[in-house]
Structures are given as C-alpha cells and as structure tokens.
Image 1 (cartoon, rainbow, N blue to C red):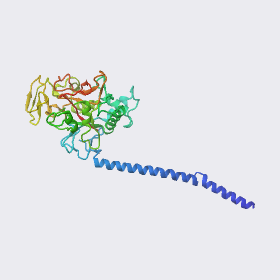
Image 2 (image 1 turned 180 degrees about the vertical axis):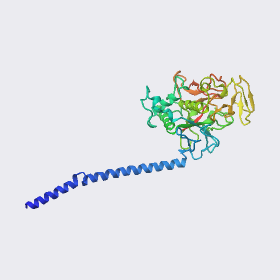
Image 3 (image 1 turned 45 degrees about the vertical axis):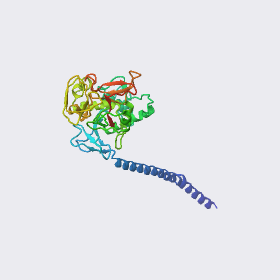
Image 4 (image 1 turned 60 degrees about the vertical axis):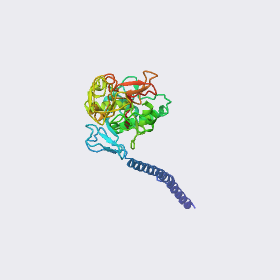
Length: 392
C-alpha cells in the first residue's frame, strides 16, 4: 500500500510539473496562442503592405528617380503618377521638371535634409533639443523649415487656419492642420515637393467665375493666369496629382521655393527680398517679348498676340511662361505678372485675413518683390491675382 501511494505521488508530481512549470502544457499553450495571434497580425500587415504596393504601382506613386542628375543624399524626387515623366534635359542642377500625360509641368523644389541639424537647432528651440526623429514630429519639421527660410518670411503671416464659412474652404482647424501636416511629412520624407512650373491658367481668355470653377486649371505656357482664395483652393485640388496631393501652396512652401531659387539657382537674396524688378514682369521695367505664342493685355480682358515691346510705366499682363527672362530654376513668374494666393493667415488686419505673395504687373519691383506678403479680404478677386499648384 505504501509503495502504491508513493508511486501515485510521484506520478502526480510529474503530471503537475508537466502542466505548470516553464515548459509545461499551460505555458506551451499560452505561447502557442500568442504566437498564433502575432502570426495573424504579421500576415495582415504583409497583406496591407502588398495591397499598398499594388496601389502605388498602379498609380505610379512613389517611383523614385535614379541617377546623380535626379537624386542625391539630400533629396529624393519621385514621379507623382504613372503618366508622369521627366522632361528631357532637366536635372536637379538646372531645375528638374516632370510632365503629366496632358502636358502639365511641375518643378521639383529641393529641401535638403541637412537643414534638420542638431548643431544648428539644438538650443532654445520651441520644440525641444533634438532634430525631428521621424515624419510624425511635424512641429519640429515646421520649426526647422521656418529657420531655413527666415530670410523670406514676414512678421504677422503664418500657416494658420482662418475662420471662413465660404463653401470650399477647410471645414475647421483640424482639417487645415491635417492638410498642413500631410505636406510637412512629405517634404521631410522626400526632401522636397513639386510646384507648378507656371502660374495656373484655364484658357486663352478670362471666363466667368462659374466657368472657372467647373474647369480644371493647367500648368502650361501661354495661358491666362487668374480668382478668390477659396476658388483657387478648390481649383488646385482638381488637377491630376497621380497618387499624391494637389493643393494651393502653403506659405512655408512659397518660402522654400525662394530658398531653392537662391541656393540652387544662384539668385541673390536681395533680388528676392528687396528688388525683384529684373526677374519679373512689373510696371517699372522694360521687356521685349518675342515669343509669338504668348499674349498680352492692357485692360485684362482683351488679349493680343505677341511680339510686344514694353516701356517703363506700362502695366502689361502676360500669359504664363511668356519669357525665359522671368524663369529661375525652370519656375516662371515667381516675381511679378500676378500675385499668387497661398493658404496663409494675415494677423495684421482682422478684416483682411487672406494672403497673396509676390507682386503683379501693376506693382513696382521693390514693392511687389518675390518674398512680399500681402493681405486681402475673404472673397477678394481681380485680374492680377492668381495662384500656383503644388504637388506633395
């Protein structure tokens, strides 16, 4: 009897050990369940990645350009969609241009990753003592971009939400901030973004606002630049952007474009910030347009064929891309011709919260310099204010 009891106790001990110890059945069961759940998660993640990859391949999104003429360690341009291609002869050195299947052209604005530098931005920053660790840290990204473009910024103007109930504007501050953060993440991740090579246009003559809102703007030469800020926002969102976002430009993007023109194009900073007369269409300069595909207007309604030679004092509006003289890094009319709406907020005048940049053909080149910020009321529209599309 004693032997039987001892044997039973031994067997019971072995059984309990098999069930409860670190290598027991219960532990093995828990491990198997956890591994199964992790396997399910990994499998779903793999499926999501494959689905995302297929969508990107179909849309052409994210196809990186290769070769020293197209990409460096500081910037990573891509083709926005499957119908986009690089315009022959254009590189990062002279202004990289991509063109979609309909002929719209966009220029890569390089934003070097070297600007996110601990040594430069590690003291007294608004966002801590480290450079952005990833694209989610949009407050740090924006801070670094502002420091990089401080020469072109102006007090009282910022990328902030404007209360506006006009249909087509942002629904609320959250919607605005989401749009801005999407842009900041893309700029950080890719080392740049695209801007329209030309001021946006529709056709050879200005049309009614109703017609403009149902049309799709183009980024092509020899078009009429035109529009209220909200209309410009709506129109910019209609263009072919491949797998990316098309938008009206944020203020920081305008400043980054000027930094690109200065740093890569060799344009002196004072030309952009003090007197842009020599690089734009202003009333106080002379020019001779020999491009017979361009048009000009003296009253902003009736367009005439070029060639045309302008004298000082004449406010003559031109179609887009009229002269190589007004192009820097393959971007036309950053200075003069028409002022351009941005998504900025002017805090200087409560009744004038909207912002447009640069000058127009009526301005003097010192007043309407390329870096200029101007205030306007909601709904303001005239024949010498237009916009430019950005892709990111």
